[in-house]
Image 1 (tube, rainbow, N blue to C red):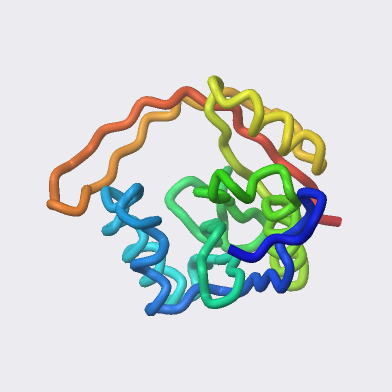
Image 2 (cartoon, rainbow, N blue to C red):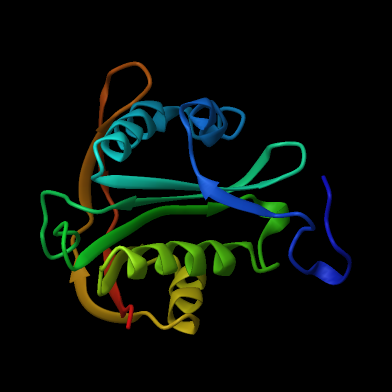
Amino acid sequence: MQQSPNGCLPTQLTIRCAGEDDLGALEWEGEFAHFRRLFLDAYRQARAGKAKIWVALIPVDYLIGQVLVSLSGARPELSDGVTRAYIYGLRVKQEFRNRGVGRTMMHTVEGDLRQAGFRIATLNVALVNTDARRFYERIGYLVVANEPGNWSYLDQFGHRQDVCEPAWRMEKELA
């Protein structure tokens, strides 16, 4: 894996919207295979203009980061299709954390949202994930509410998985 010296951003980092060929790589060699259907649904939503999936890659097409964005969802306080977009699923592979990849991905996503006319980016961060909360605060997000964090998804076998992950709802104005 190609890295620049001194723990900085990997050289030749590419951040782009994911294509259908990227769906398998989002599973990170099986670590997130249980989200296979979630990734496929997000991709279908992206094709319908209701979501985006961003990936960070280094040569040769090695995926090291990902972030999903809902532009229009069932909860308008998170994403309403006009002014608010909901960022979720930001992940950076362990060996590339604390090197600016997440910050660069968020900057790219926020710029894209701003250009599309969105004024507020929202996200939820688990109460137990204090490192992530500090990261989001450093890049301008503020806690605006508590979230019960109850959600569900169908795993790769079609079984419903219920999740209870209490979280902070955070927002940032994209001025």
